Image (tube, rainbow, N blue to C red; front, side):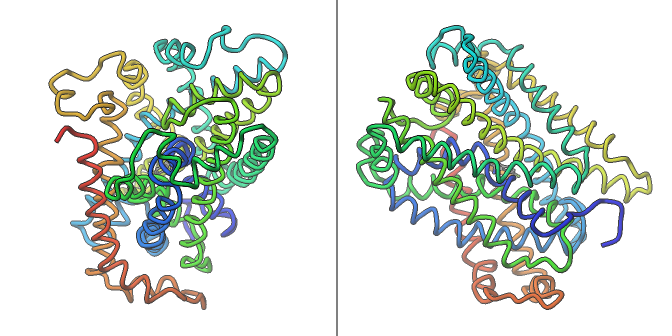
Length: 471
Ligand code: PFF
């Protein structure tokens, strides 16, 4: 693929970047809590079912579309058929909208890392406040939140504007091994704490539901697992089309399609081991979302004494690596779209300029989210909130509903249907088997792409939408 779009230095570089995109806030604040609150091992089995029947399959489909067309989602989909362009647009819009809240959350982690970093040297990093007080005070200081969000945007800009091999690949080749290294260090430390085994009981046994105050419901567990899988594997929004478009023809797509979700799931389980043993050892209780990652973990590290500052610093550094590596894939989807479409109109735009424009658009989208203060700023009009479910009444959730709740599952379903029924599986097979690569799981892909994945994804779409609104 000789062009000036850039390409990965190696398949390993691609794998690292794709794993980086997949591992993110979703793994850290979603998976471990949901696993415990929804039955432990039974949840893990349900999750694995979705990863295999949808995650691996969509990953393969997106990579094939990307590498075969050598384009970002909108142009790639319109190369498959003019009317499929809309599916590419779902991706570009989702990526742009997700960045409107995701960077703010990574910005939180930057603030917490600095706080614990300062405390290592004896100064006070959180004004002497406990987890809840500090979190409420921080989220209700929108200009400070915005400042940390802008810092996150600046980091992402530098990496993405740096290029595919020299920016994104370079960052992930360091960031992803570092992320796994930090996870292991924290897990080892956790298991020296008294009472840590409760964390294992929470995550892996049915007792977890008692601890979280929940009851097992098969449909709820399926809904939670499916939504989590789609977001966690970065699917349905063209991130893997975009990353796949920079992939060499000799890379083994079918192998990559298994490796990336496997690494993502391993990271989700390891994240649980880095979080819950410490939470229980320090007398905390299970939660999900920002409450877990910021309030509970803050209190957990504080109660460990001085060493808690070191562990806390490392933990938030890990969150930053996970978050930034996801942010840059989102930023790349929209940037690649601008780069490709301006080249198609014979008005090529430099990467730096395109990424600059994209950063600006995303910053504008993130400002109201920062001002909304997780709903406390009441940016959302009351008439809208009246039909949103409890716990989904802030701007962040509106963005989340549009992207994760609607466009991502819809995108995933349509991509599978287009490849399975319109282009045909030989079209996919040809690409996977280029340069003598073997497609060992061909039969499995054939059945899933045409039937299983779209059907399961329709369930995901309906369940996700219903979970956001009052019905
Ligand atoms: N996979 C990321 C997470 O688990 O936090 C979120 C994400 C990144 C979703 C990139 C979609 C995407 F394209």
